[in-house]
Image (cartoon, rainbow, N blue to C red; front, top):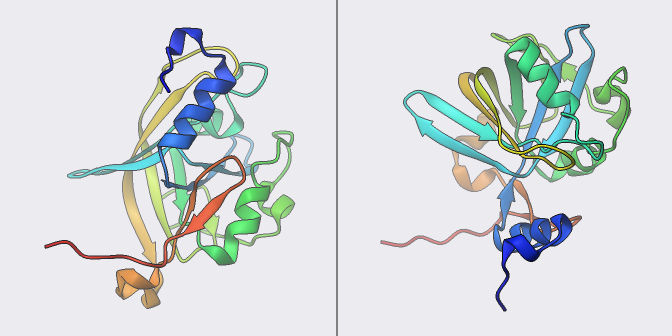
Length: 193
């Protein structure tokens, strides 16, 4: 099969991307609005960028009306966010946090997870997440416009939270996204010399 992107619908293009880029780690991003309303949303276009400085990125698409989602607006206005690590114990809450709700809704309450204060940034982190990265905004880049228009958020990690039990990398068991509602848990690894 071959596909010319110019001839694909937006939905077909999205499906090709999520079919081929697997598994995708999930950035469960918590932010605060300028009015102090907590926001929590998952993004599976997410990656680490580098270690000097420690940098991560995620890509929030515009909503169905072509407007920036609350997470992007909050990051642009406050310059801060937290990336919470997703494991099986919080997977259902993470999935539910993708619900489209009004910006006045506290999404921690909406999905039933407890917030905990961060150390260096104002947005709270998810208490039940086994790890989290507090970040300050490096840059937010608009790549596309209209519905599903792509944006790229790059953040500098300023503080790490990691449960003591995760000293062994094999204990992490993160959840990654495979398809629309399909996920996988990283349980098995192999070593190459």
